[in-house]
Image (cartoon, rainbow, N blue to C red; front, top):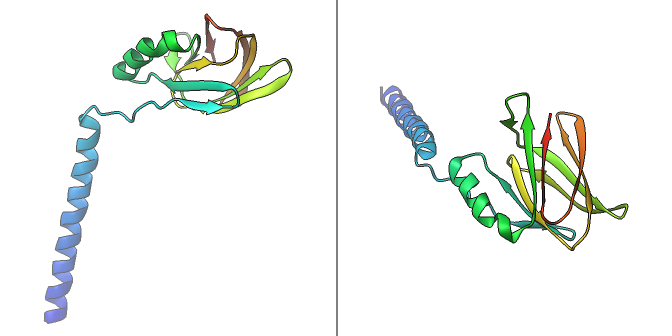
Length: 140
């Protein structure tokens, strides 16, 4: 009888823990606290990507004057935001940066000049040219 009683207690404890973890998982997104957008550097380019939520969009808008170049990734006629876009930046025929865009908007800064950008989403590659003071939207 002891074994059966102990095993039922283990099941009850496991169920309580599982329920608690599930409750935590439900409550965390409700706090509205997003992971901070942290600037990163790849080669000679410093960039920050995000813009999924309104708080990130406001933060990027405030930071935009410090970067000078901007990319926006969208999809379809309605321009729905995309993330997880592979970005490669070239200058004078040489790769200068490569990163994965974690949000639909990327702010970038680098040495003065013109940059050729290729971006790949879902196997489809798009191209554009950026320079300080230029913003581009790539739509799939």
